[in-house]
Length: 176
Image (cartoon, rainbow, N blue to C red; front, side, top):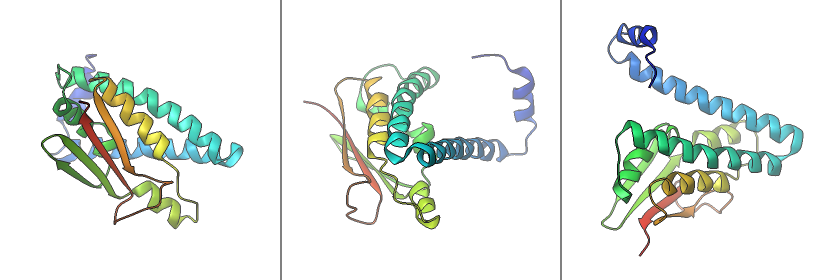
């Protein structure tokens, strides 16, 4: 990690609790940029092209982010528990405001109940974003950085028909 002495000093000078809020502000800004790029591509080239590009970007990002988090959090090994720990610190999972984690003996489920992206699109009169391929690519590439044996299964995600009071649900487990 670079020194960034001046920036670290600025962070130390912030009032208590502001550093965390600043981190979440930057996460939301990252998502806003992602959404604006997507909307621009969608408007110019259509939803299919925008989704293909988005899936490519997030597939690569999953790999990059997993590697960086593994190193930063010192998560050596290839088990499901370490992958889930890293995923909880990912920009994607940390910024899901209304998420539910279910930890079971042999698997973990992550559910996104109130999706800001989907709810914003609905409010703006846009179609539901078919994000399944985008999220699937991100999560699979993220998990693969820990182990080829971590299975990522999508139980529900748009464009799937929604069953239940949530937008998407993902299951993670070690393959037998």
